[in-house]
Image (cartoon, rainbow, N blue to C red; front, side, top):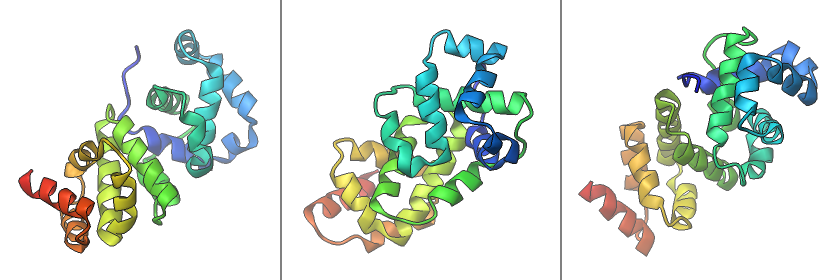
Length: 195
């Protein structure tokens, strides 16, 4: 399979902002992608309908996140589509930060949920994974209570905490210091202390 790119979302955010891509319909973008060797190889084993859902998600992750629910390998779709955009020179530059700033600057329950799902599922790309962890910890440091609600609802909350270890350590410690004394918050603080 094609080599994974380290700057997947950077490419995608630029692509989203690109006027030429914005002028194309979703069907035109899928058709153009599927007419390339990269697209043909990928779509031989993957669904163009699922690719459409992933592209919609990339254009508005808060609205279309639920569309990814039944796509186990959506991060692979993101990766290959980003590779295509870069190799076809439809996008240039680094857009990881743009993507995260555009959609994950503010904190609310929906953003925390989507950010956490990306953090847990898109680990193959080390740079993206690190940037997700950094964004998570910065926002956690600002308002940990929104994150606590999401973490408490997850059976795998320890995996989330372990995944953000590479993030902003100072912000993470700030968030931990702001936690209250509920049973779950105490359990969370104890888990962090032991790690």
